[in-house]
Length: 479
Length: 93
Image 1 (cartoon, rainbow over the protein chains, first blue to last red):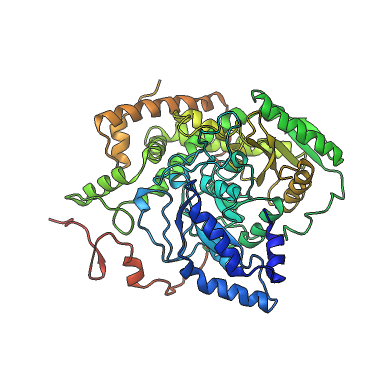
Image 2 (image 1 turned 120 degrees about the vertical axis):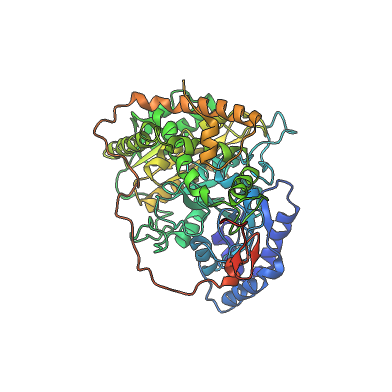
């Protein structure tokens, strides 16, 4: 796979035209059998964007992502282009405005191929909760090549499409691991920026104190290209941060000037299988080669993170999803009274997992349970944040596995709690709001990709990307 | 053990569960609530709840009137409309 930098070079040297590049990817996306796109944009609709991009190349005035074909998770509002959140309740929804993130990408010359499949309302870790059916992982278990594997979730369509090579990169969202876990299961790079870096304006809301957009790419450098485009202050998102953004490409090929320390939490590795343990050992060896200090650290709150998350995220979701009532947009079921319309619309419009999360959220917020669950979880969230702050007094970065397992069979994990355990290593970072990146590190015994997660301190994406890039070059996953 | 009244919870969420689904979700919710109950082991006496990770005051902006959408655009996604309005069943007697 050519990188964004290489593609831009070919485009500027006229070795390929913007239109040829777009057609090449569009054809691959159209022919793909993995269900990673909910919707492909009619090439006619993109024609003027392609022509304008070509003109900028002709005039040597190309933008950051000029002419680069991208996939967009079907959770971002795209003006005039269907946006469904992979839900029946939004099946026919066509936004009348553009999300901040997609507007930034368009402004930088990117061209969208279409909308990537995902778990319904981003609730899932296998992309099996989508109203439009499961996405298939392009990777196969070497012993069971006829079995379809999940790509992870919720940004499963994004990760599968990037891994299959039918889009250069895709934009996902991450609430409890939804960028990093599918990246790990599909052997690609996934970056979740610090909460507040990328505006949530125009992103279909799941859990507003956790939701964050980020890139899924073939390389760390590509992720830096995308982050340079989408990170920015937006007055329309009340939690958007107004800190000065770095150039995330700046230090990408440099070694660190000063000695840095990476902490590996021993409590994360207690119950991992040998495949996963091997990835951490491997990363440790490469860090030593890079003259980076590695120390053991230990969290005291890890075992409480999933519980905290599965109270707070459903609570916020139940509140956010109250807006789907069948009146102003989306699916409407018939009913004699207004209340009947609300109830029938929601009962028919939401899928099984979304219904479950709304019910959990409603329960933990209801009178008599609010203090015992919701408020308690918010207090524990503070302890989790403080636990990270304590560890960061001794280290610059934290290294963990991204997910506890390789890609699993479609239909294999039916029990919700078993599914929720997939996010055991990604959820703590989400609760703390820290930036984290998953990079592919190696293969399991079944020849399936596995990833490692690097976690940085608040708004330290530039050095996080620098470290990830150094490690990526050592691990040589793509060679 | 939990005491989830699934019919009441679904009523609050404006969702209708038939008996089969009510049984299924009640079991599922009980399992999940029991699973998250380990938080009770943690002493949070004196810990303040964390609502927003940055804990900065919410950024407020001037509420200025701008013309962003036309009536036509706003109504374009309406499942049912009449003239310039969303259409719903009669709500007053």
